[in-house]
Length: 315
Image (cartoon, rainbow, N blue to C red; front, side, top):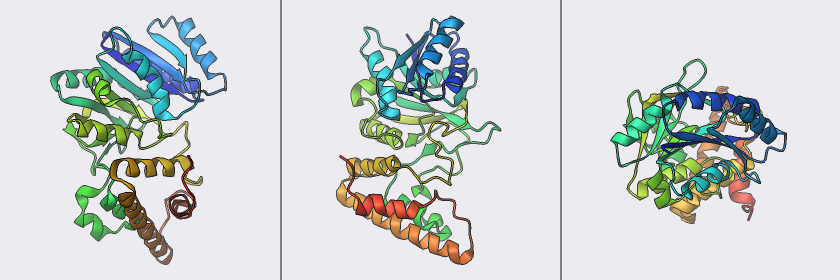
């Protein structure tokens, strides 16, 4: 088998089926299987997905249950782990969000690129909105400097440290190597996952792609943003993260802390937290005086301080 495509579902069965339909078209002519993992939706999704695949006669689609909702990485790992244990594991393993819809040539473009670049362990797509607007999906690794930039939000500081911002600005218009990619449409080489392992399941949601791409880099593999692979993405349908009237969920803060602590140690994490909190407090004070809009999720500064300095992380 050339490609295993994994689509993770959480309470979005109808949309997941649309993503599967798009993936099946994009995989025509390629030896493949599509594993749909229901991440313990408990809303009838598993039954709906299974019935739809059976009634449509999709013999290339397998619907499985995760057994529990351990988050994005854990859910994808259910299918990735099983595939790597097969007698003849797939050459490439591709994860696709349930709210992402590849163009007919999008998946083949990733396969073609990786076949031509043997040190490319990870390749991701050009992700765009329904109207074609590019999404921020190519990134640099977080650091103390990037925490200062995202906290203070000062033009002078951004001009001083343009290469330290986490999002790559502007988004690349040509295929190029990047540090990490968003997981809405991401392909892995089998040998990469066999060498470095799967997603760290300590992350419930967010930072798991960052961590995996960092592990790939440290092992000598490359991560590429492939603009020839185009995927439409609605974004945050399962999580509601686009709704700024809602607080940032606790798991985002926990994932951020785990990423910094795991990759840089406790002292570095403390410094990153102090810099970001000070910058954020400064920005919000300026915003009030200048009557600028505050685009952060509600209570973000309060929650940042609470979850990083006041409350101990959950065990």
